[in-house]
Image 1 (spheres, one colour):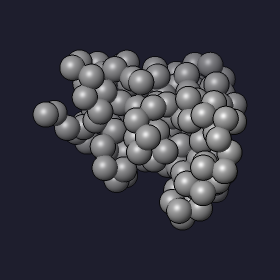
Image 2 (cartoon, helix red, strand yellow):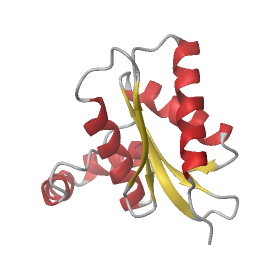
Image 3 (cartoon, helix red, strand yellow):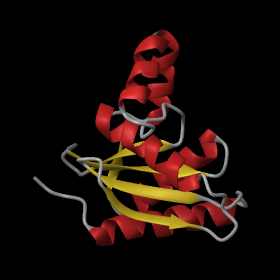
Image 4 (cartoon, one colour):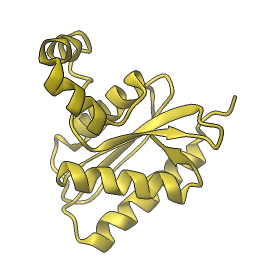
Length: 141
């Protein structure tokens, strides 16, 4: 089974930031986690607010932990809010079910980790995460 490398994590961040800058989004924070939810790499653009790291990591942590994008988690949370409130409490603040993170997969569909962004709308955050994953030659889920 393959694993997410630091080089890939940095490629994801670089491409995501480039996509954000090209689109004219506000300053972003981007967190890349491995398949165990450990931080692999993080970048914060100049001018990003102090909450960017915690939010980006929590979106990615939820995505990798549940095996689906944070967009899907947000949809599921609407159907079962009590479970997701309990999950967030159990995770000591490391879990956010809000659009802006995707699971990182290899060509065979194996989960390598997740990337989350914070700084724009959920849709903007998700879009740059997808751009970063694809630029690194990986798949997203």
